[in-house]
Image 1 (cartoon, rainbow, N blue to C red):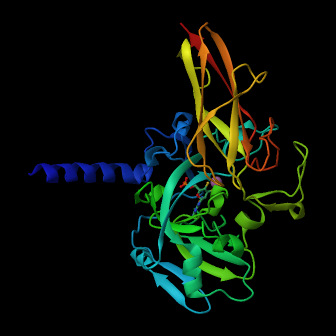
Image 2: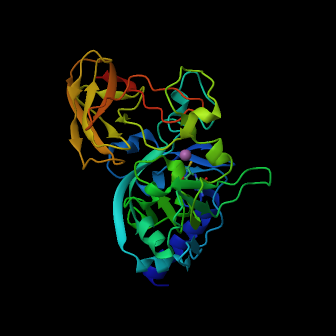
Image 3: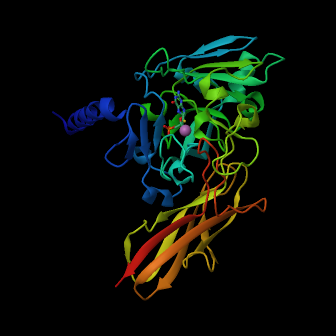
Length: 374
Ligand SMILES: Nc1nc2c(c(=O)[nH]1)N[C@H]1C(S)=C(S)[C@@H](COP(=O)(O)O)O[C@H]1N2
Ligand SMILES: [Mo]
C-alpha cells in the first residue's frame, strides 16, 4: 500500500469510529453537559483566542443530529419561485465569509440566582468561528417574498424523539433575514461544516443568540406570521422589561431572546489554578451583539482597582476581541481577577446579571481566583 492510501485509510477509520458516537465533535476535549440532547461545552482555556477550533467548539442540539446527508436539499418557498437546491447549487450565489460569535442563550445559566431549570451551562456554550456561505437575502430575492411577509420560517432536518415532543420549529423576523450578515453557511473555520454543527447547511445570525442559528437547514419560507409551536411561543422568550430575581413573568410580557449581551469572559488562569510568581497574564474574550467593544478592564484585587487590558482583533457587533492584561505578582498568594467590558455605545457590563425565568443571557462580571506560587 502506498503511504497516501495508508493515511487515507487511517483517516477514514478515525472518521467512522468517531462519527456515530460524537457526530463529528471531539468528546475527548469537550465537556459533556448531558446526552439525549447532545450538549458539549467548550473548555474555558480555549476562549483566549480569536477563533475557537472546531473540535472543541461547543455543541447544543435539542434532539441530536439527523443522519449525515451531504446532499440534503434546501427548499425555499417564495411566491416567484420554489427553489429546490442541492448544497453545491448554492455556488450560484455570491460567497461570503464572516467572523461571528455563536453563543447559546442559556450560556452560563448555572450562575443565575435563584437557580433556574435547563441545561446548567458553565461559560463554555460559546465560540467564535469563520463562517462561509451565501446571503439569505440573495436566496430570498430569487424565490421572492410575499408582500405581507414579516417573518421567515426555518426548518431543520432533526426530529424530536417522539410525537409528544414539539419539533424545533422556528422563524426569524424578515428584517433580520434580509440583513446582509445573515447567511446560509456551508463552511466553518475554512472546512465543510461537521454534522454536529449543522452539515450540510446551517443559518448564521451574527449578534443573535444560538437558538436562531438553525442547523441541518432544509426549508425556508417567508410568511406573514411568526412560527407556531413551543420553541417560539413558550421557549426562548425573555421578559420585556427587567424583573426582580425569582419573579413570575406572564407570557404576554415576554419577547423572543435575540441580541447577545455585553460580556467579558476570563479564559485563563483557570479558577483555582496555580501559576508561577513573576509576570502573570489574565486573558479572555469580550463581545456584544449590537456594538463593538470599546475597552475591557481587568482587576487583580477583587474589583478595588482596574486597569485597561490590551485588545487584539477587529471589533464589531457579534464579534469577539481577545483581551490580555499582564501584571507583576512577585509574592505568593491568592489573586482575585475580575473582567468587565464596555461597548462603543458607552454601555458598561453589569456586575450582576439581570435575572429571567429561563436563565438566558447571563452576563455578570467574570470573577476568577487563582494562586500565585513560587
Ligand atoms: N435544527 C436545529 N438547529 C439548532 C438547534 C437544534 O436543536 N436543532 N439548536 C440551536 C441552539 S439552541 C444552539 S445554541 C445552536 C448551537 O449550535 P452548535 O451546536 O453548532 O454550537 O444551534 C441551534 N440550532
Ligand atoms: Mo442554545
